[in-house]
Image 1 (cartoon, chains in turn red, purple):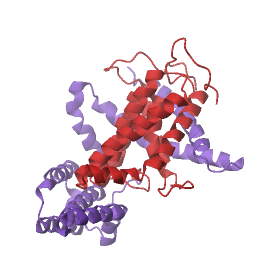
Image 2 (image 1 turned 90 degrees about the vertical axis):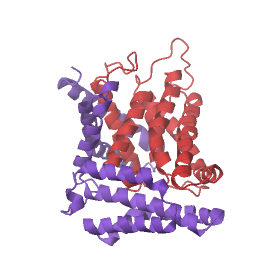
Image 3 (image 1 turned 120 degrees about the vertical axis):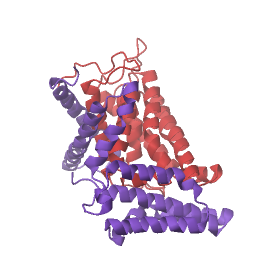
Length: 209
Length: 199
């Protein structure tokens, strides 16, 4: 169980995935599936139940970075497409890609990519004041863009109607974006080395959990 | 692979090669915008239901495929009835339902392993942009194996929480789950490196 392998070697676009990258991508696809197995819970004051799964896309970007995070979501979607019932509520198969919520599902890799890019931009130490905006931009702004486009396409809704339909999920997703950032901070504190340390100006204020 | 949604059978649809069913589904999806009359949509729905009959899938199982969509479809129908009338609502909801049922039919009649093979085969043209289909196949196999491993780790975390009398807090569950999974990934990565995956 050594962690000698540097997690963030200098990256170039065509850099081959190392065996550690492959393992992280595969395991994060597994985490996404495990989050789908958590029963939905409804926090006080909210009417829309929250499934833990859409947190997975934000977590993937915030924990293992843009490239590996986006890849893990692609792998997860591939497993769903070939017929494994891994989406929350035991859904799976090709049918989910024909339904009206297709945009929210195919948006997972892009959401992870954006959260990861923003997270890597700042580097270690992971802070909530940078992490929460990152999960909100990637996990809500970007994901909803795909989701709304999907509803306009599949359900033939006007932009206005699609946008308002998505709004019902916003309170729950805001909670998830915040929880995802808290979780990412806890993970980076307990398992350092995944983010590149940001030069000399490492602020200590929220490095400890 | 008993985890999947596949239902074993010996029908024509079960025996058809996976790639042909996927192509049919893609073609159906791409041409669905051509359907804009209620009778056309009704025929498409009838054709899909006929497909279920040919595949020998019981009606109950077919209805179960549509169940997650009921509320969404009702909302979409309601919106379209208000915005442009019954006819439009029937066309939009009918096309959605037909495509979802068709896609589910492909999933029900095709083995997960066969779909994986098609997926890897269709990756071959991506070789030119540096995608190695063999590694894609390895990655998918690793991910499938990781699902029960991570679910098992999640069970351990939950048991540990319960033993310490902690309630269900998403953070207290997710942080140890992710960290344990990352440590598992370390071991998995070393095992892969030892087998020469990096060479």
